[in-house]
Image (cartoon, rainbow, N blue to C red; front, side, top):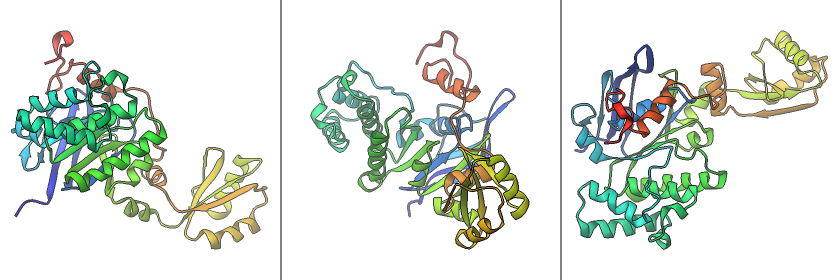
Length: 339
């Protein structure tokens, strides 16, 4: 019987000198699952995906892709995976079809199969009518769809998407994500997605929240939100500092100022609101009640909101990898040339 596990990770660790980019993480991803890695820049997402895709050698630990060890059987792993990086790696001077055919040739696909597969994939991503157009004429969203088609050319069992929608407009992000979700039905592919967008994480089957190189939670989106329980109350007034202090003192809750409002969590918002208004002396101007979100989960677990941050050692490593200045083991290549 075939294994139902596509990706197995056991105590996987990566260090760069004194920097521990990934710290002994362990998890499994099922076949045809959409698995999300959620975390801020520098959390270890790209380093993890780079190890799983055999671009970096682990310092310690072990990982299997469809039963193949990423360290001992890298060639077999590469046959099993497709990759779409955050930054485009298409050849702008080639046509859409030529980009796909060239990729297939690198994987040793037969010429007859190449033609049929490239036509099939261009149709699937809605680019059949642009097959003979140079990629330099494509929009950002079209390029991303073409990269997904290229990643699927050799029929991989797992597709890795590293922040695939960064820099795209909301409509293009939404349509791209809807397409990615359809791949499970059309291709039976496992999707491993890294993101710092909460709406993308919500659409995953399961999410691993990673921070400072460690997995701090792993569950379904509903399961993660269910851990918090209760409702989130948001209130604001003319003096939010005074209002927050009074709420903390009178109700003994952890109230925080966030985007011009005070937020805190209670068991039953509908029952709590009348009590709130009856006991406060500081004026309240707005109030709302909602269920916890993944952002609330992240704040609860890390003490801060997920957000973009300045480039750090991990981001610089990614840039060096893309320009060919880092070897498979993380060492810098003299001269910075590509393979």
